[in-house]
Length: 401
Image 1 (spheres, rainbow, N blue to C red):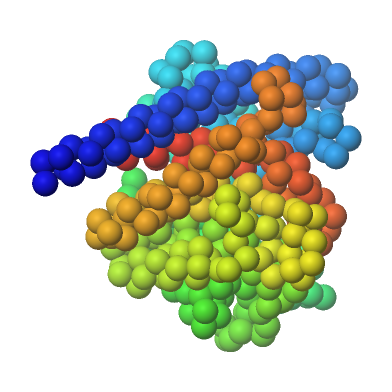
Image 2 (image 1 turned 90 degrees about the vertical axis):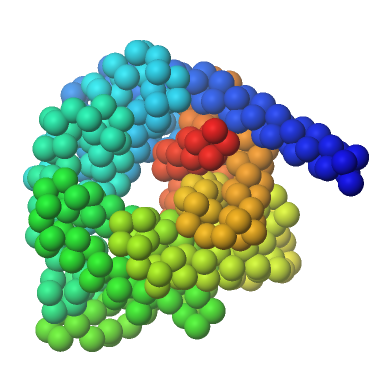
């Protein structure tokens, strides 16, 4: 028995050492690539006559760097990455860059035209406040939450997502992605003691749980509501291959979002929803062995030409980060399953999906898919894949400690 126990300990130690080395290699690669991305972004800004505030979003098919204005839903991810690098390294180089890039986004706290203030403000100012405790960041988070709350409709019980397409395509669109923006409301409620933000976030989560999911716990992308009475008009999957398909990043938003909602509410229904999403998604027979999903798990080409179907590293990174948190809320046997899945995803991303140093404009991950039906950002590096990859590494590191 002692020999068996010793062998198990040695095996576990070897596994932990291997994971630690992979983790360390990933951070080293991230350091090199992100420094390069900072240089590339600065060079591109110098070559643009318009001196508006710009952030990196993706690499174009021709290899050039796409920069976007601060009103783009992806603007907060780059500052968030810099804060995550500072959290890991405690190197003032990263803090200085994080501070300067974060404050470029301050005016977004008044932007009531977007439901994505969580992505834009919480991943930048929220992360800054979490790591520094400085009140100036807190104040921006609270005002941004107040602005986001203005998009809440009591009849529907949700924060309105897209306004474009109204009324020709939908009346009151709510997308699964919006689960991620609820963290801004939950946190504002904690910071201010104002219950209204909490209640709005809970109502939105409840409506999403009720109306976005099929019996197998896969998710639609968009639910269109009648703003007059809150009834459901239709359910579609705007960025998937078909309305009844399984758009991978949408499933990842759901798992991460309901796990986060459980963190703030301890409502067991949210925890169970996240567990069911995980069970459904990672139980699919067409899921690739490396755990990096196809962009849509119902793409018919998976059956005939699987190597030609784009993967989505961004969905994998979101899943990994969400799984690490989910593992902290369940029993040990189930937690091991979630950690093993997340470790497997990070192992694949780190060893098979990273570009060579100082290439790919400084992004961290290859092979993400943005909006396939619109033929945009297909099989390219994308900024939110990098952000959630670093967040997943951070969470893996914390669990290891």
